[in-house]
Length: 415
Ligand SMILES: [Zn+2]
Image (cartoon, rainbow, N blue to C red):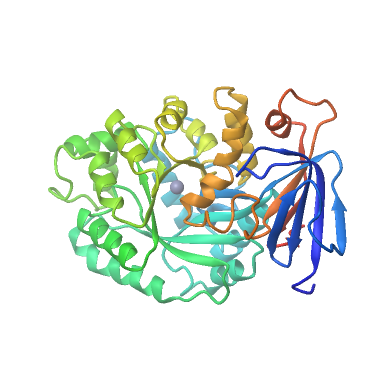
């Protein structure tokens, strides 16, 4: 297709997310970019697609996943499993059952595309792009954009230099096409030496990269930070990773927030058990810090109710993620949005924003994707709307009877 070809996409509603829904909306696209959003096509349009009784929305952004688990047909262990036991199950699965990581990533990308996802925040483990070139090739040919956060795990002091070398080696891998970008992920407080975290954040700051860290995921993590005790301590001992004195007694998630805020952008994954002053800290730094809530993974582990309404009220920037198929039945971010919407406490318009523009901003891509605005990439999808009209357009869109009928990435159909 010629880069200058101008096309129009019409539907009962266009949801730009950056503004209110437009009834009888038209999206005009030229090449990879949006050139206009309104009620009429802009300029000399060569082709018109009319989706009829449907809604055009921005491409969906899944801000947190681990695609290496995409071959799993069901989550590991059983609902309500304590995190330490789930980690044991992950380790056993990696040792005994894991197949080819490249093909799992490929499958995860295809599944994501099928559900209208056009951008991913992916956590990548050791070997990414070096001894497993299949993963890099998959992301470079995929019709979606990925921020690849290289995961760093090393709680013992002796492991710090090696992990930093790994991080640097990852940063030296250059994307062949503009389809993926670098990020760093110091995994979690119970797996990362404070010095590794400090230097990792410094590396991110120097290279202008986002950082993603699992934080305040369980009460056991808080217990370990506070007193060096509990199920996570036992797990670390079993794995030969526990070293007395590495985690200062009386530590808490706030100490970690104060460190990762030094990165240009920080994603706090989960944050299920943040204290009030920690939520306040995130609200104060909402311009560069985001929480990534993974609703069905949160439910799988049987955590206390997620303080989503409180976070939003305080002004915390909240994006959504599926997490992996090791704790979630699928990689369908739209299902996470419906899951939140169906609980009825969050306005559907806010749910739509969390699954699109908020995710894009969390991944430091808010200037290019996440909403339908002139100049942004033409990443969008169309949902056929139910016959019965709901009271409010967002409610109509998030109705379980609405069905994805098309998805576009940079102006090209993703089907
Ligand atoms: Zn995760």
